[in-house]
Length: 160
Image (tube, rainbow, N blue to C red):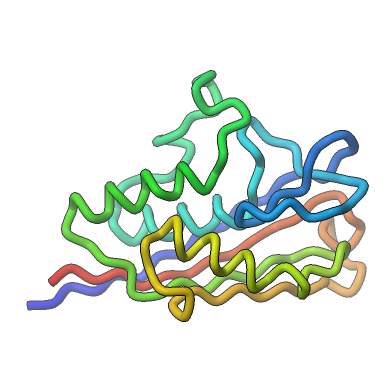
């Protein structure tokens, strides 16, 4: 019997000066970056939380706590590989992942293909199983006023 599960992840990080803006491992040229204990890759964090939630394995705060110095400045794609390993150990495969970035600026369209490739590689799935979209919020809310960037992610995992 096949078992399928759906997961949802959400993350947000504040935009600040003197930090890199990294999304799915892509360093985006911009005058602001995301604040966080790790590399603050909001997109990868949301994806990991969706996957962990689908498998009922907790969340990234539980697995990679910001109180642990081992994760200070950590590359989130490496953490995503660890999440993938945990899923595989439980017998799950990732069917697909759909992500949405909420970001007023910078424009992210030129970087989406590379983001998809990076995330798919970290999750050990084909790129055509990863969707990434970006949208503004028409100047509304904290993302619209460029205080931060948020990401939502949904996934489907399967256990045969």
